[in-house]
Image: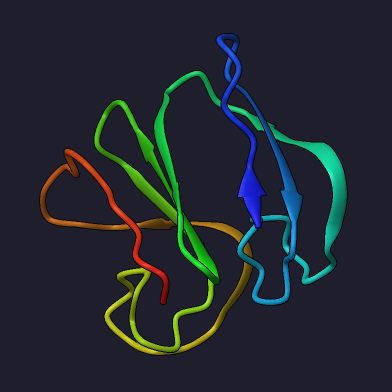
Length: 102
């Protein structure tokens, strides 16, 4: 699984395994070649684990996708997330993100 580096104009490209929805496409189909996902010039950092991904925006908003079997995407539960990208409502702005394997 891989989020390609964000382009200066905010374009984000993805490719790789997607069996947990970790590419944020809204489905679980693998993506074999770099494919446009979205344009968001406010994305500051993209972080990926084995089965999930986090996108941090410059204003502190956090978007998540993929497996949540261990609560790793911060939803406060362990339910699978099978949507495109989900905005996580937090009480404070997020300053930085890091992903482990699972």
